[in-house]
Image 1 (tube, rainbow, N blue to C red):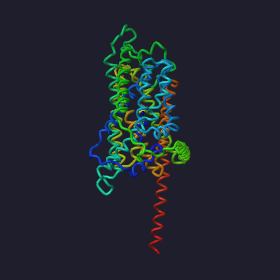
Image 2 (image 1 turned 90 degrees about the horizontal axis):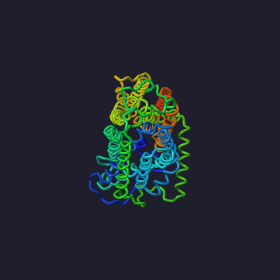
Image 3 (image 1 turned 90 degrees about the vertical axis):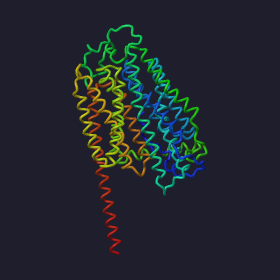
Image 4 (image 1 turned 135 degrees about the vertical axis):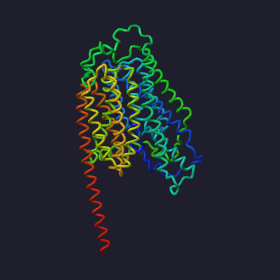
Length: 501
């Protein structure tokens, strides 16, 4: 889900510059944002809200045999393969509209699999659900790029007037991502409302349900899934199975509505529209993907890319940890699974706020102070999570821990994109693709180890990756400043030579 915040530049097979500057015959449009824009934006947000809501609960409601997080690791592993080999063909051959619909349908299948959770239903659902990660996020980016060009052309906005095409595109994406980011809040608040409001629905026995007698000594950083006995899992699965069915039905209904609305009311981008079609011949598509893989490999083995790789990996680890061990060990274990949605809604709200503030601060003071603040705040966050011992009087402090994780998410989501744009401005498509790749790797690692290692071990690992991130960025920035200084000195010598002549 968390790849949705990358622009369409992360795929080599789509050239945004080609899309922006191509000359196509389009009718003049009224100078208002087209209703198709809001159809794409709100529909995508509705689907993402349901996906985020069910994602945050997987480590709790499907705790038996570590089913939830295992299936999520399968989902992201399949998405990694699809992003490399399958997505380019689909975007080229069927267009962004049907890629969006197929991605939403993939998420819908995964959600429906939760009605009867078992390896026989959830694993196939995860494989199909990977279509959502592979197709749903790039499709609206391409569609909105087309709408921005259409708006720009219809309003006779030229580069000599107040708003260039690049600025207009950024404006469209700003509105889109602002709407999309609300998915964290909407999905998790729905989860809280349904599970907490329906906690007593069809509950036959109240035995083993009192949280007042809960033992917190094995929660938080002391939590070890491999050591949990089956009789303690009532704390992670709601007493009312009916409330779970109701929540899954609500989420599935949201996703099904988005699929139907986008299928029926969202028009396709014409195949002969040069704003979208990059290659139409299948053989050419194969060559584009092959060249994309080659350029990505060359980029990954470059020194700057190697040094900055931990940044994307660390962001993926944060998101994966927040949706797995944090919700299980800190939220469900201490205040109950019904409160997962409320804590993660707090997480989402702080994510939105911190993303906005980081963007403003980086614009005003540069990236270095923001990176320093991120390293310091994350060190404090992991230390608190490692040392915090929940009691009956302090267990609500988990909201503060969730808020700190939301701030970390916002900081590293924004700075990882900014770092990539600063260091690799000459190969943005490849660089953003590599960033997305390592973000998915981080998500996969988090989900696959969440049930295999104790939480404190995972926190120690986060310390190590954070240290590698800080060290890698420091060395990469030092190399960049040296290059800038050498270039400045070279220009000064050339100017002196010319003045002397």
